[in-house]
Image (cartoon, rainbow, N blue to C red; front, side, top):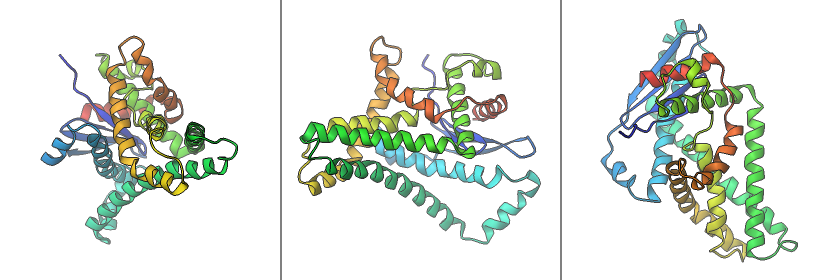
Length: 296
């Protein structure tokens, strides 16, 4: 019997897990207790149909993940530094603003942040590579240089983020999330010891997806012109949905092939990146992740 597929993400002081029908977040409060936030996954017939179409489904999944994920991030952000006895202040604070506008603004900001980040990661390397076009000419050289610059920006940014205490905590919960899913997929009881024994890496991770956008972009850009510069910039922008969609398909493929000899190595670059985006969690963080999964 095929096991159900679960996904998740780290939130401040906790983990969110999701199935096809529900989403659940657990966070550690300042008094040591674990608090929960649950919501059903809305039934969206149109989205369900779109998520069956290759290339399109990847873009849909990104938008859907951003919209739902922000609600769980909002729950955690409102509470992780607040004592439970002060939770009543949350409602009072939200009454002073238009809740609908805040939710919409949060979702829009989340999506725009992703898009702006993608634009920066896509376009800055184009302009830097163009500066060296006299030294490294030709399509292959320019696209290769562009890809190397992207990797440097991506890895450098993630590394610098990981040095901050809050992001380090997020990365630890990210590792706990992966460990729980790996433990579940190995059909082992979800105990702290069993979960801690698992790898903190996972083939379906969004970190792998981000890296695949760089690698897939390298291949796609070899089939479009790099000169003149304005054409190069334009096709990079127009191809963003294509790169995202194809990268999602590659991510799904590597996950399916992870038990197949030789083919399983296709997912290794994404797993290597996770050594940066995940950290070894503490036992109490694993306990939160287990609680979130069980609550789902």
